[in-house]
Amino acid sequence: MTASFANKVVLVTGASRGIGRAVALAFARESARLVLAARSADRLAQVADEVRALGSEALPVPTDVTSHDAVEALVDAAVSRFGRIDVLVNNAGIGKVGTVESAGFAEDVRLTLRASLFGMINVTQRVLPILRRQGAGTIVNMSSVMGRKAFARFGSYAIVMHAVSAFSDSLRQEVAGHGIRVSAIHPALTATDLLREADETEMPPPFRHMTPLPPEAVARAVVAAVRRGKQRVVLPRTANMLLLGEALSPRIGDAIATALTKRPVAALLGMSRGGTYHETILSRPDF
Image 1 (cartoon, helix red, strand yellow):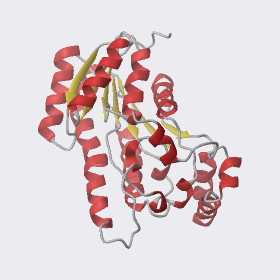
Image 2: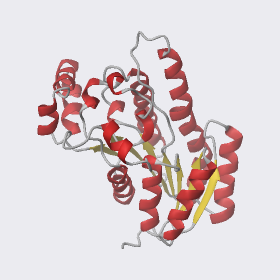
Image 3: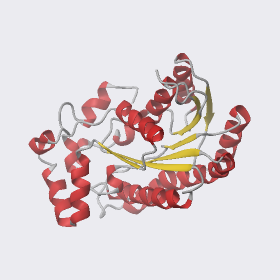
Image 4: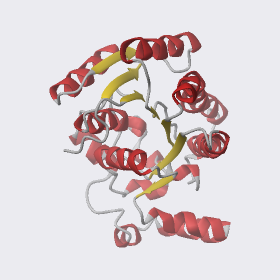
C-alpha cells in the first residue's frame, strides 16, 4: 500500500453509494482521512464504518449540497475535526432520462442543475478559501462523457455535464499558480443507481446494451488523477474516439454515437462485454 495520501484530508460529496462510496474507500486504502457528505445519514454511516474498517478515520456529515447552510456546516465540521482539506471530490448529483420534447424536460434540467452543478459550486466556493490559505489542494469534479458529447434522450443530463466541464476548465485557469489543481473526470456509463428508475426502453440507445464501468474503476482513476495532477480523465480510454470525432465534426461525433447503438461495434470498442446496466445494478444492491 502506498502512503502518498497518509493523513491527507479528502472530502467526498455523494459519498453514500456508487462512485462516491467507491472513491471514499479507495482513498481510505491509501490511508487518507475521509469527510463523507450525502443526504442519507444511514447509508453515510455505513460507508463511514467501511472506511474505519480499512484503518482510516471517517467523519460522516449528512449534507444537502444545494443548501448553503448545510454546506457551511459540512466544511466547518471538516476543518474543526482535521484542521484542513487537501482534496475535494465533487460527486453529488442526479440524472434524468427523457426527450427534449417531453413535458418534463425543462424541469429535469432545472433539478439536475440544482443538484449536480449548483451543489458543486456551493461546496467549491466554501472550500476554495481554505485551499488558498494552505497554498495547496486538489478539486476533482465528476462530469461524464456526456460533458463532451450528448446522446439522444439524455439531453438534460448532458446540458449539466457540459456545464460541469466548463466550470472545471474555468476554475482550473483561475487557480493556476496558487498550488491548487483541478481535475475533471469523464466516465462513460457506470454501474451506479443514477438511472435505476429509468425503464430499459427509455435509456439512450447506446446504453441499452453497454456494459457499465464498475464504480471501483472510476474511483481508481480519481485517485490516480489526484496523485498525478491530471487535468482531465476519460473512461474508458476508447471513449476518446467518440470525443475526438465530435471535436473534428458533429457529423463524425453523431456517426460514432449511432454506431455505438450496434452491439458488435460497442463490443469491438470494449464497451459491451457482459451484462447491461440494469442487469448489473439489479445484481449489485450496494450500488
